[in-house]
Image 1 (cartoon, rainbow, N blue to C red):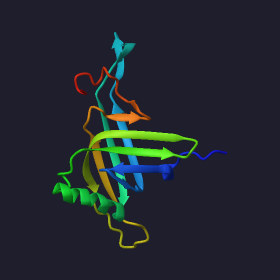
Image 2: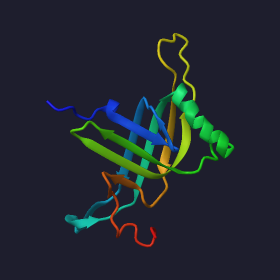
Image 3: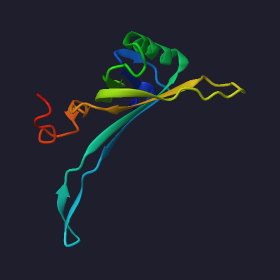
Length: 151
């Protein structure tokens, strides 16, 4: 049996720093839709796209990103960054890149007085670059989608 990719397989680079994430999500919304003529399917139309990320980090890794905020002068002052999600088990490989992510703190504190678990901080962000997302080096958007946007 060969080893398969799991959540433990991923290295995640955020703001140029490799961090351990408790959980990471990258979601794409593509509003392409069916075109209709007289109520009958008749091809499709391209729609707008967005991509959002969410990171769940323990305090140790959250504080690593805090250093980037300190250098920027504030959390909101952090410039959009590119993120890399990479896994390689020797048998399988997956490389997902998201470009121009503007971070926001989502859940800074959620304190449970009982303890028993590491403190988790949630950050979310949205993709702002027309480079958008690449999966194993293949762009999600076509050259036609990004014409006049990417030089």
